[in-house]
Image (cartoon, rainbow, N blue to C red; front, side):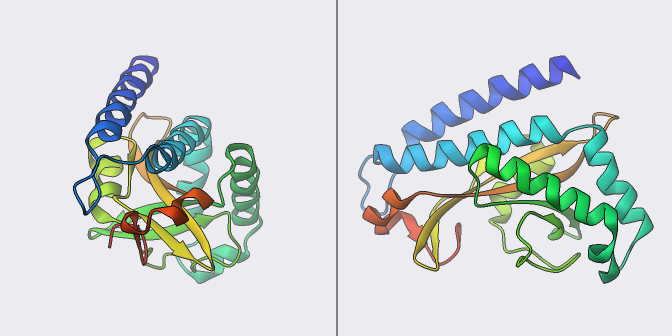
Length: 195
């Protein structure tokens, strides 16, 4: 597992370096440093949190899914414990929201959310499928192509694969990071990232 982690870190660093240099706005201009910084911050938060959660913590989610295949799962003590853990991780990495998604028929379904106001159990989550697929299918840290705005705040979203104790990608971690500097770059903002 350590070798896979090292490879993931190297690939992520290369991806961040590559995308930081190759992103361009709709006008064809070079990507502004503040935009690169917002994207890279989201990717780092997703990567760091995923490393903290992999293994036993991810297996707890699987156990919860196997136990409670319905909307009542959010009412269990285990769900509340997992959500509280995510809230703590969100504070640690300065994320506005962290959430865990399962993949079913090419849809990303919310499992655990650090935001109590978030979607319901197994509800479809609005994601940039291309970016989320890089995390789930390819095992890469990825980010949405644009930032997004909600409630007068600007965000960037990144995704990371979550590995179980058998070193298999089981879920995808989403990390929404706010960055007020994105307000200065409307060409890099969409209704919801990636759309």
